[in-house]
Amino acid sequence: MNAREEILGRLRTALRAAPEEPEPVRDYRRTGTADPEELRALLVDRLRDYRATVHETEPDGLPATLAAVLADVAVLAVPAGLPPEWLAGHTGELREDPGVDGLDTSDAVLTGAAVAIAETGTIILDAGRAQGRRALTLVPDRHICVLFAEQVVAGVPEALARLDTPTAPLTWISGPSATSDIELRRVEGVHGPRRLDVVLVYAADG
Image 1 (cartoon, rainbow, N blue to C red):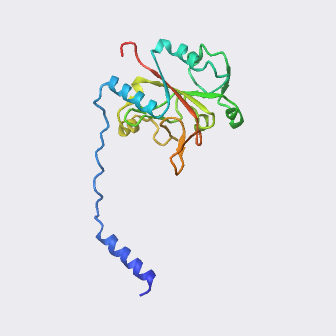
Image 2: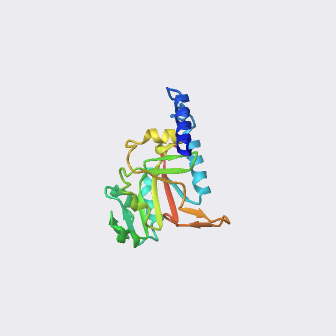
């Protein structure tokens, strides 16, 4: 028996010993029990720990908050279908769904989000409403993301259950793009935006 036949024989023996029925998949928690205010506070804490800038506002204050956040943004890229009322106070140039060259010369991009995970401080975009294609949030140096409190869930299984189109391309964002070299020196902006602003919108009654 040569080496090839020996290896194949071992594989056949191992496969014969495998159970016919796979073990049941773990029953992950899909609904949260945390208080919405606690979830919001946890998410904000995680985002700030990742060096994101968080701005909190009520729905009526969203245009004014965005106007303040965008005060130093001369050229803003936005996805098609972004609610126009969000930009009621913005006076700079708008580029709707620009190409790569237009994105590269834009100061920032503004999008919405699909869902956010409080436990990990992660925001998920799924190319849905007010989000656009993935390149929009990967090329510009600054990403401003509007997130509503009701979009915040506790864990990953809950977030995945919220996605309407699980086969869509997903972008998972946990703070500004960053990496570290072998000496643990942090470098930001290597794989995406160097700056992340999250505008968290919550109801007036909390």
